Image: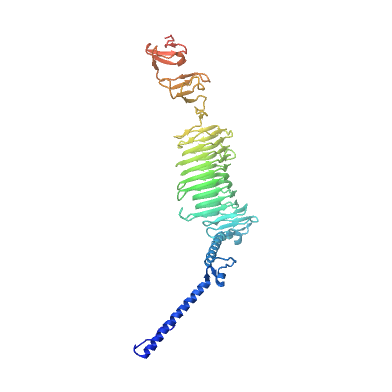
Length: 536
């Protein structure tokens, strides 16, 4: 490069001419140099890609580490970037799905060594939204009390036993913060454990307080004799689900206890879960606020020493579908299956659908329940002396009781309260006739006279939809066939001698008012007679 060029100076001297020629020469040389550089760059570009073909260096750049030959370098870079991104995402997902084994933190599982500290260390190390697994122990894990974190999934190998050595505490605790539902533990899952009490002062197996969206799956809880024990304590909750669980042998305590203290709670769902041999198998409470939405699908409530299901005040919308409720016989076990007796307050909205009640002295006892629906249930009292299928209290209201199948009870229904619809004593035939009090006499409806058409028992009533004055209402006064129907008139139909119908049409006992006689006429089926029996 010859820039900057020299100063030309005076224009009339020889020096000027020589310098001018030199500057022009320098400019030309610089222009050539720039052109040569441009040509060099273009040559490099041409060598990189020319008509889709590349130089050896560019061709090598288009070949991936795995030997894949790409059409362009950009294609290779894009493809490999996508692959790396996918691998990073997969690795991140794997890291999120890491399972923490309690045995890696020192848990022994011999049933003698206290594994509490090791298991709590595993829980803390795993952190939120991680899986914690209990491998199959040699005997069982000995635990006092451990507390889990939000989002944790707690699993075990099949039939893993937890020996509960808690003292005035619960074995597994899931407890949110002080504010419900803002500080709730969320997305919890417990699966496959068998809890057995080894400390008489343990309060229970599972403690859930201020929890949201929690599943308890295939879990078994056995043998808690403590009078204050609760197999599962659930307090201030939303969407807690039990799938195929078994809670048994808590003879002085409660199998499942649910309550709302801080705020309204709801959606406790039991699927094919068995609860038995507890003083109270299930206790539903609303001690501080409403508990709304308890659903029990299938399963069974059996052999309770007090009551199978206790529903207290401020509990709304309880539904049992296809549940077996058995053996509260008042002898070996308690006498009441479902106890809804309140001293104050109210229960609103209870449904029993297709449930089976067997060998209960009192299937249902209530006082203070409103909007109760019973549909398609079967009650078998097993001939227990003094047994009552349904006993209502003075504060019950708005029950709907369609026909149920009840057998073996001393008293089917002991009614009380107000605004109930009890259809137990109504029978409806396949053709729509209604039989009040389940008697043989029915209420029939149709067009035309029923005589000679409608078969019925004496005492039946027929409502004629196309009748006129005097032929609207009929009574069956004799026979079991289709004859013996007579009109019923609250006011006598008025005729004279020329317009009155034949006595045979009106039938025996029919009465008209005859204006020619100025007195009633009575039909004996053949003749008209006056009140003295004389022909008229």
